[in-house]
Image (cartoon, rainbow, N blue to C red; front, side, top):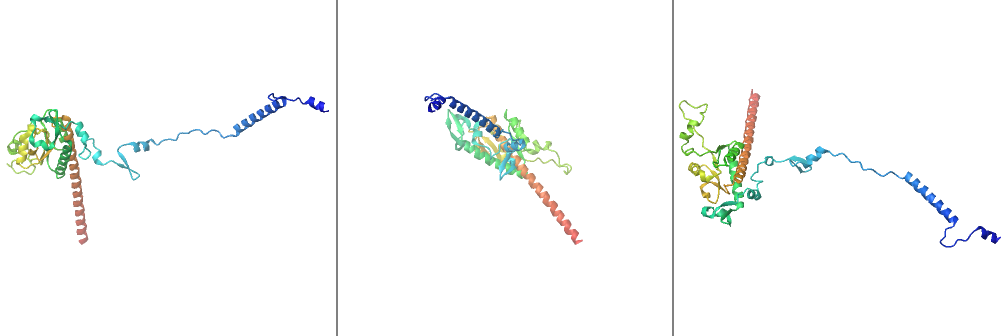
Length: 312
C-alpha cells in the first residue's frame, strides 16, 4: 500500500520543479495577472493638467511702469516723471558724466576764479567736479521755477553753432523767449531804440505814446564767452543771470553759475532741458494758483450776492 502511494507521488529533487509546482505557479501567475488587471480597471485615471486662463489686462497693468503699487492699490506716477525730459531731482552724476560735462579746457586757458570747481588735471585738461555741477544746477532750477511761478519773463540765449536748435526747443517747451542768432548790443540798456519800434502797442495806449518794451526777469546763457555783452547788460539792470561756466570763464560774472563743459552739445542740451523742465513746473504752479484765486473770487461774489438777497 505504501508502495502504491509512493508510485503515485514522485519524489522531486531539490531545484527541479514538479508538475504540481508548475501548475501552482501558473495558477498564481494567472491570478496575479487577473488581479492586476482588475486593480487597473478599478484605479482612478491619472489627473490631466488644465491651464487656467490669464487676465492679460490685469497682468499688463501690474507690469506697466506708469503704475506703482502702493497700499494694495494702483496709483499713477507723479507729474514729474511723466515727461521724458530729466528733472533736477531725477538727474544723477552718471548722466552728467555720460554727457561729457566734466571735461574742461586746457590748463593754458584756465581761469583762476574757477579753481573751486576743478577736481584735478588729466593730460593737460582740467576736470570739473560734477558734484558742484549738480548742486549749482539744482539751485539754478530752483531760481528758474520761482521766476516762472511768479509769471516772470525768461530769456534763453544760445548763439553758438549746434546750440541754436537746443535754445529754440528749450524756450518753446516752457513758453519762454530766446535769442539764437546774435545778441544785438543795447537790447536791454537801449531797449527803447532797439526793441521799441518792434514792440506791439497796447490796446489802451494813448495817441503818440511809445510802446514800452519789457525787460526779461531771468536770462539763461548757454555760451557765455560769445555773449558777454548780454550778461553785462543784464547785470547793469540787476537782472539775474544763469550761465554754463567752463574752466576758461570767470563764474563771478553771473548770478548763478553752472560749472560744466559748454563745448559739448549733448551736455548743453541736457542742462537746457533740465532748466526748461523747471520753468514748466513753475508755469503749472502759476496756472494752479490763478485758478485757485479765480475760484475764490467767484465764491466770494456768490457769498455777497446771497447776503444781499437775504437782506432784501
